[in-house]
Every structure is written in structure tokens, then in C-alpha cells.
Image 1 (cartoon, helix red, strand yellow):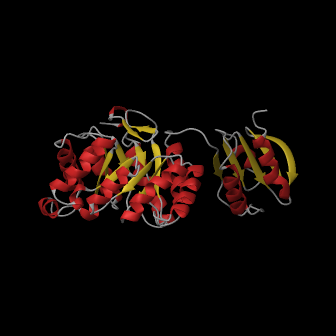
Image 2 (cartoon, one colour):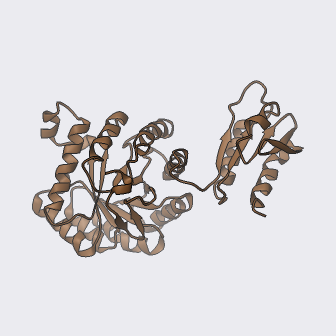
Image 3 (cartoon, rainbow, N blue to C red):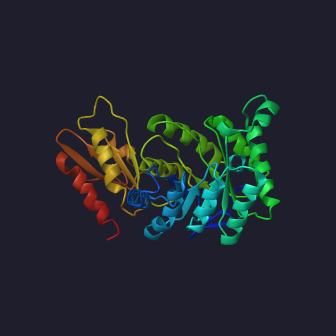
Length: 351
């Protein structure tokens, strides 16, 4: 069931599945019971473009904090539960818009049923999560190790368990830190599962490695029409996860809006701090609501030609630079005025 045909699921004020836009998700790394810190981080993530936020609920204080957090944020909140079914129930009662559980570590069937009944009472979706690190022993033995086939069988078994309890308001995630295993697992489950899929490469790593693994894995999965929500899992600031997710979606043509910055690699002709300039431009345009391409070029030799496909660009030279529109030189400006000149052009773009 590819994304155009998956079941629609309502998470707070956001609808996923059924061909709705792919939503960007992240997870707070604050102590959830610290309401002030958690709210501050969520609001920063909202500003960056996060559309669904997940919070860890490792104790009852965290579960009870959800209600107060919800009053101060504007996006749906997912409660992440492991082991204790009572925390899942408390999270739902305190206003969680969705809960994430692994039925395999919640306990016996009676405890899973108690969670399902509470979710049914409140109309709260359940995200059924399966990770390669927690694959059941009998499936590891059956498939002679952790495999994509084993992950899919595990997920389908958990889905069936909840369906038999009379509930199908479900979202499914099936993750692995092995990129190609994760891709294969999604290819397999997409053919067998009618529910929206939350996709990501789990434990992807630090900023460099994590971005590369996530971009490759998510690119292969999303490019096949699979996936309804995404999270880029990085060992670092959650804000970096949002930046990467937005670029991945835009690169694949799955999202429009926001300025795309392109820049050339440095070379021996470069006579300005191109790396610094490109980073400054990227930071400057993050909050400007235009759907255009901006080029940052390192020299005046090839700058105009290389920037031809961009809507607007700048090219630096020794002590001066060029402002370029659609490959045509508009004017020369002093090097130190390049950034501000570009900013003013963007602020008055539609005038």
C-alpha cells in the first residue's frame, strides 16, 4: 500500500496517509517532566518546520506533564512508551495525540488490551514500532539473524494482535540502523500493510554519518512512494533533524516552499570566504517564505553561468562581487555588501 493508498489517520490537527503531505517529525531530548524546557524546545522545532513531535514518557511525572505541554504548543504530541502499560494509559488520559508502543515489550496480552481499550476510548492512534535491535528471539532463529523479513513478520504480528482487539487506528514504523535492510523491510511491508508508515533510519549516528545514512535510506524509500511521516534520527540537536528532513523532501520533489540554496565547491580561483558566506546565506534565508533557488558562487569567472538555473545569486571576487538574476549580471557590489544586498533583494522579491 503506497502512500496514495494508505489509510488516513488523524493525529491531533494533522492528517497523515491517503496521499496527504509527508509530515516531518522529531523527538525532544529534554526531560519531558521539565515542562518549561520541553515546551521551549518544541516551539523552536515548530519554527524550524517540525509538524509532529514525540516525547519520551519513562515515568508517571512525564505522562502527567503532557497535559501542560499540550497547552503551550501547536503541533501534535506523540508519547513514546516502553515497558509500562500504565504510562501509555496515563499519557492518553493526559492528552497525547498518539502513542508509540512496541507491544512486544509492553507485557502480556491483557496489558496490551488495556492500552488498546484506552486508545479506543479516546480515539488516539497507536504507532506500532518495531526495531531491529529488539527483534524477537524466535524470529532471529527462524531467519538466522536479524533480517528485513523478520522485521516485517514481527510488525505484521503486532498489527494483527491489535486488529483482533477491534482497533485499526494504527501507524506502523519498522526501523533498522542497517540502511539497506531498512529499505528492503519497507519495500516488503508496503505491499502488505494498509496503514501509514513512519519511516527513518534508526540510530543513524552523528551529524555527518547520520545525515548521509538518512539521506540514502529515506531517499530510496520515499522515492518508491513509500512513507507518510519521516524522522531523521541524529545524535545531536533535533533542529538539525528538521533541516535535513526538509532538504530530503524538497530534493525528491515531495515538498515545495522555502528557499533552496545551491553553492559551488571552492577552488583555487576562490578569493572570498565562500564556505562562511554560503553558511550565512543558508541561515539568513531559513525563515524567508519564498519558493525560489538562490546560488552562492565563489568567483566571477563561472559564477553567472553556474547560477543560470537559480532565480537569484551572488558571486564573489577580490574585494567585490556580483548580484546575478537568471544568469544575468545585475550589478557589482563591494564584497562586504554582498550578503546585505542579497537579503534586501529577497525581502522585496514580490514587490
